[in-house]
Length: 154
Image (cartoon, rainbow, N blue to C red):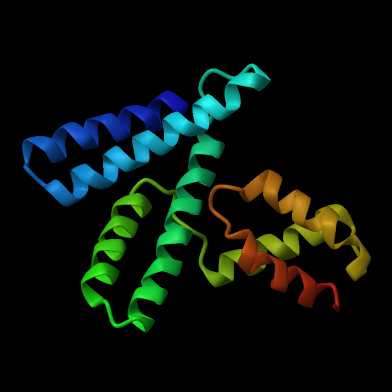
């Protein structure tokens, strides 16, 4: 599956270059450069190419840092830079799996609580770990944390 996501990057880059879409080409090159850095960083642990879940985490991190930049550019009255970052976010998010909506997230939290048998806030780690194991790609863990805490009475 990792090759699938990697091949999607290169195919998209080729298409963007042929379409002379400079903004998309630039963003895809940035993604591929970051992926190469992540691969190189993983080499000491014996991994030649990182798996899909790490690529997804890398993409989420890239999108998150750009959202923070957009906020700062808007505060600094630099709308042209904010728009550039938003365009990059759109390209990056095109490769991310669809995120769960609030109702599905709530259901996943309830299922994880039932599965782990957690009864109090002290067992929040078990629930979060179960959520991460089952829904890592489609669940925003930062949003799930407060839901788990509330469901466990924290």
